[in-house]
Image (cartoon, rainbow over all chains, first blue to last red; front, side, top):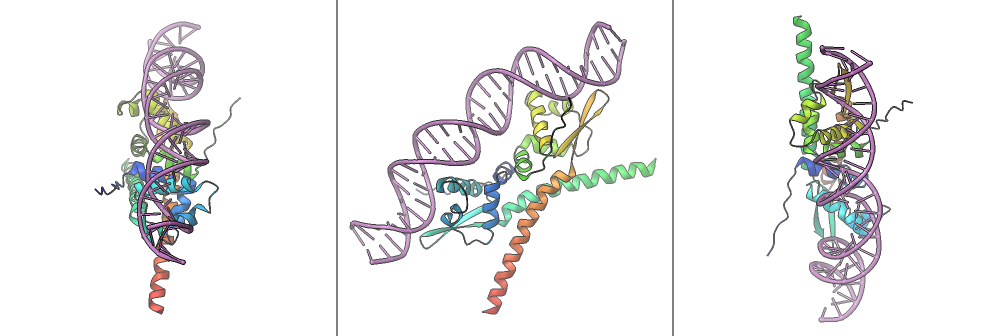
Length: 110
Length: 110
DNA sequence: GTCTAATACCACCGTATGGTTGTATCAATG
DNA sequence: CATTGATACAACCATACGGTGGTATTAGAC
């Protein structure tokens, strides 16, 4: 029985996944979509298993995905995951802009 | 002796602070910059002290700051903190764009 | 000055997280 | 099909995190 893992793209997981320097570096490297987990692991001062766990956290957050190429699995960054995070920040900035506008309006009316 | 607390604006703290629904909600509410910690705390199903800790985490991350108004302290969101996070995501998207461009170029040359 | 509302801080507790080592699976290769 | 390179997963450990209640500090109100 195959139960496909659920990728939720919720903000908790996405921002949590990005709150670690190793994982952010993996995201950056995986944009090119050429690195397997072994190649990634070689670059960080920690065990292979630790890097694997970081990739798993990124995968659960929907920031990267893996697909087989031969006997390796290649990690590549998922643009949509990054955009979910960015959209939230954009919303905050939009609220900020609206607030500034309201305040400017108030000053103008007084 | 007064030792001012250091606000670092590093990505670990910023994304970590945003990885919690309560804290994101505080950031959103504090954009208007009118809420004291008591008013904030009333909105969440947790103790006053818990909300205070959330605000402290946001403050250490540079996402909000507090200043006295009368006997209260008002929490307001710091736009620059949000922008630090957004800039990193923008960089990733830019890397993505460059990669797509390189690939398109390769296809064209073949 | 005394009282009190608003905030800050401390100690504690359960659970999640980041790391480790060891073992199991899985697919190409000989 | 046995081997082996690449990945997955489980058990374990130390520390960080999110919550609690209780106590201290601070600044207006009286």
